[in-house]
Image (cartoon, rainbow, N blue to C red):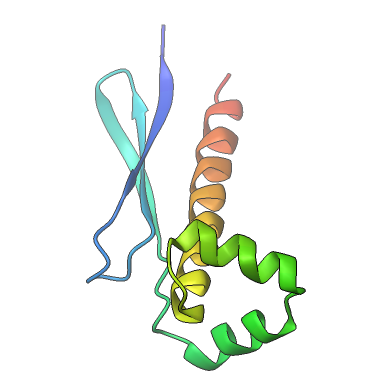
Length: 98
């Protein structure tokens, strides 16, 4: 009987950060994908994002990034989005095989 599962692992920042998704049937890898979170790719988008946040949200993302730099808050936000997308894709893939 097939045992479908997925794994999500962090990627190094150098190739764009984010997460890798691997899809399995038992021990056999069947596919996967990459969900980048490159905070340096669109710096103006990050500045706009940060500047439009309410003060409480700014504090939240700076704390999440463990930094006082808006670019790091943007990076933490992108990491969260990439992780959510990778997990959602993995869950969808598993659910369509049951």
